[in-house]
Length: 117
Image (cartoon, rainbow, N blue to C red):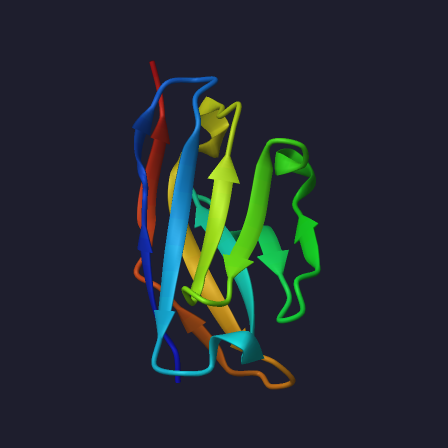
C-alpha cells in the first residue's frame, strides 16, 4: 500500500497562492490515480482535482482556471498549485491515492489551508 504525506498548507491572504505537495512512498507511484480533496467545517469532503496514472486531469468547476494538479514520477509526488485563492477555499486539503483498476483508496493526514485577511 502507499503512504501519503501532505505539506504546504498555511495562512494566505485572498488573491494569494500556495502550492501543496503530497509525497508518496511504499508502493509504485505510477500505478496510482491521485487526487486532492478538501473538507471545510460542517461540509462534506469534495473532490478538488484529480490526475490519472497516465497524467489526465480533471477539476471541480469551482477551481478551474485557478488550480493546477501535476505529478512528478521521479519524485513520487503530486502537487496542487493554487492561485487567486478565495476565503471559500479554506479547508483541510487531503491527498488520495487510488490503485489503478481497484477500489483501494489511501488517504494522507491532511493539511490546513486558510484564506483570510
